[in-house]
Image 1 (cartoon, one colour):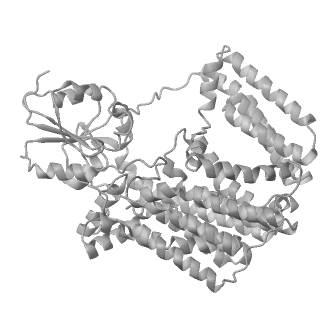
Image 2 (cartoon, rainbow, N blue to C red; image 1 turned 60 degrees about the vertical axis):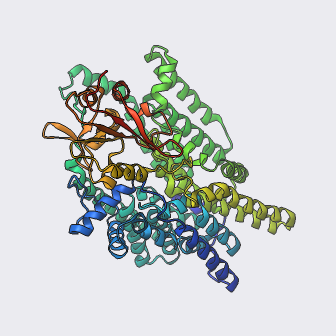
Image 3 (tube, rainbow, N blue to C red; image 1 turned 45 degrees about the vertical axis):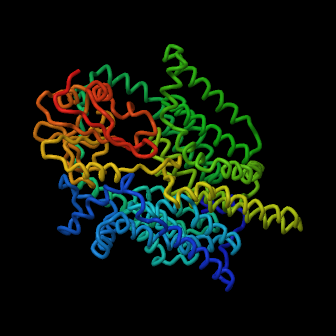
Length: 640
């Protein structure tokens, strides 16, 4: 069926030949050797930070009793295969930061090989080796390899998954399809974000299409969704008893008939439009083309979202639909009518909002965030601008109904689609959520460079082709960021968080506390309960504002405790005053969280806690060199 021929929109492309020269192998081995040195450099020199202790505590339990249990007796179900590899490392080398990170560094050392397998399918040798070098020396991958966390495994598995999808696209053998699904399942053990890679099954159809490939692709997607649902059910079952959130009481009173009727009238128009859109999309796609059907869907949904929100989604769909419509027909008549309808819908919504434009924009733009894009592209600002320069002329070619290079398909399927979905799901996602999209953003950049190089070579424009090679080298440097690379290798900063902040020194705080040889009645409170529970064995209280701690605590025997460690949690200023201001208590030590010191500490100690801890007499008894890791002593018998 021609309506599903995605290859109509992309220029003829064939996977790279697998002939490998001795020189290529030598360069690959040289990059790998240097990568091994960097990935193991100072592996145990920094204390645990981030979420490493969340892995370290179940590993300690595995060594002791064979099960990955946290101190609260919660079964930790994420990254199970890595947890047991870490446990084997601890048994072999003894418990230390080095042994906990050894599996990550060991597998991270294989990253050049995995990057080469993927890139050599799609790129010629020089461009593939550039990609391998960037993947090997990327500060983010080096940090991930030196972190007792599952991101380097996820990073490599997702590349192997896309590599295997292309192998299946060539062979159309069910065994290759099943192997791709197996890679997907393995990746789920490390990170549920694997689900965002499913668009990879469309990539082989952007190269060449046949009905068998389409049907098998649907089968592959179905198997992966089944695997995801099973994995999600398993992990949810493990967390079920440990995630009873506080302050989640909902009003369960039945809705009145008036409310139901109002809701029905309010959504009658958009529901009707959705049904009409589905009908038009099916009929028009069959009559015309896949692109025509997509334009119908985009423009119709732009109208729907103009009515029900978010208006940001309406705007993006409108631009995309207009872009595609003009490419197909070179006319703006129908498009102009749609713009008019969208404008009328927005004016209608503004009228319902009493023309409070500020409130309307606030309510209708926070449902489709730009922050995921800002976080992702902001990590490589110069490289992102260069990428935009490479793809801008191609966008104009698409508008002129010309086919575009395959690198655009990789960028759309494995970068644009996932980040767009995340932007609908969350306003400000953790930067690590975008970690798995890095290889495909960088791969698509080199695919575009290869395209321009071949384009200029076919036109006998040698000087321009040489300029493309220079741009490729510059792009490598811009992605690697040599100064940040040096800081990362020397443990000067952590990069996955997207800002290269100094590594927080929880270990030094714990060593100071151990050196005091405290009596049993001394109270120890930590702002980071996980790190200090791992290093000290236990603390008396966890101190964190209710809004931030709510998702990590549950009620147990009349008090709120952390789901991971079972530590009682101080959630507000009143509870803090009861402990800090108790006239009968012994000395109290408050261990600050170095990871919060780079921002405003009051943002984390909310609900009156920050005011409470500053109200009672205290003195700073420990601070590291940069002043981020601090410990305060609150003497017994406090007086206001």
